[in-house]
Image (tube, rainbow, N blue to C red; front, side, top):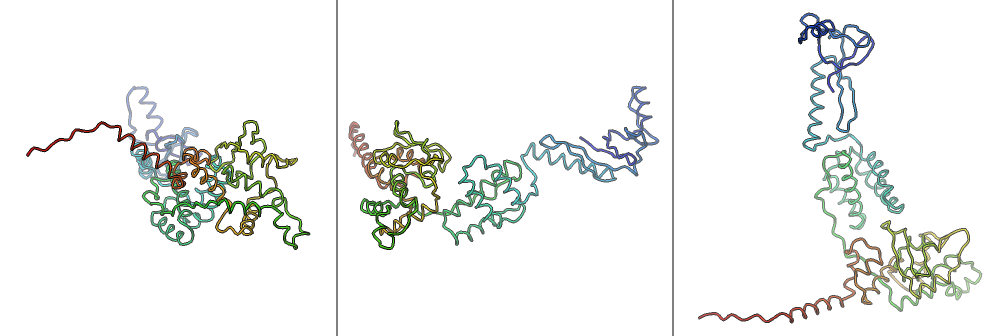
Amino acid sequence: MGISIQCPKCEHWQIDFSDICKGCREKGRENGQSVKCEGCLTPLCKKCQSSLKASKILYGIDYYDGDGRRHRRKISTQRGVAEKALADIDLKKARQEHLGIHEDKKTSFKDFSLTYLKMVKPLLSSTSYDRFEGIINNHLQSVFNCYLYKVSKRQITEYIEKRSQEVKPATVNQEIKRLRHMLNKAIEWKYLKENPCKGIKNLKEPPGRIRYITPEELERLLSNCDTACLLENPHNKERKFSKLLSVFLKPVVLTALHTGFRRGEILSLKWKNIDYKERRITTEATKNNERKMVPINNTLYGVLKALPVHLGTDLVFPEISGLQLTVAFHRACNRAGIKDFRFHDLRHTFASYLTMGGENLRTVQTLLGHKDLRMTMRYSHLSPEHLREAVSRLDKSLTSLPAQPQIQESK
């Protein structure tokens, strides 16, 4: 690493170790002494042996960066300018190595977001990746249309304020969570020195929605998930019903009720995931991209055994999209007169009845596949029994303590 000089004749670059000519250098070697050229001060090109006069020399710098990569840059015809450039490189390396200070790279937010998506794609499920890609491409890129290092707290705060007027707080928090993770990766990959999201708090979200179906509503819903209810209308006698409505809608609803599976987990369920001998279902296509096992009870066993097996596919519920299922379920709820009830609420129904039946929250967490117990705690108010038992144990513990002697105060 040092100052380089370029031969004006052959354009060969060489390290400028000294400014003494070849003859003076050889003379010094013979005498065993350090000799300074007093006359010519002219180095020679190592390639063509021509004299490198100072007036025609182009100076450059030759150095290695912090990652060990070699760089060569042309600087100026003045040696002093090249020395200043080299000193600036030394300063930047020292700041990075000893102080942990990194220079801001002039990378646009859009370019970095493409790099980020490429790097995290192998770590995400296809559904999560599509959701993150939508957040970045549809919202973040248009707002932060600048260099990555120019993203500021003010920009982020203004984005939160504007976005909160359009969508719910939970949606805004998810978008800022993705932005925060992106910028943390930018620090890890040495694009940034600090994260402008640091210190920005999430919006306060309302309590999570818990809507579970009553036994009376469930009876009406199941009766309206069958084509028999539609045939009562004379206009439907000549109608040909879809496979979803005529075969799969009722079994899908019952599967959701007795497993707590999400819509995507049900539609991606395969026959190889069902073990009738051990009476359990193992699914890998979960939201958290982890395996989950749920036992098969008697009701679900009868539902699955009654389903037809289709040739050419291993799916339990083939040829059904998520949108088709959502629309068919919504119409069944309308026919049954059930309001404010979504397909995902079948999962809430599964957890709610388990909790009201006395199951502890750890068991419910395992069956639902929640990573965080706080997600399951929303059902805790449905089970006052475990609170009552805790207080009862405290009562027993306190009554078993020996009585403390009373100290009389002296007059």
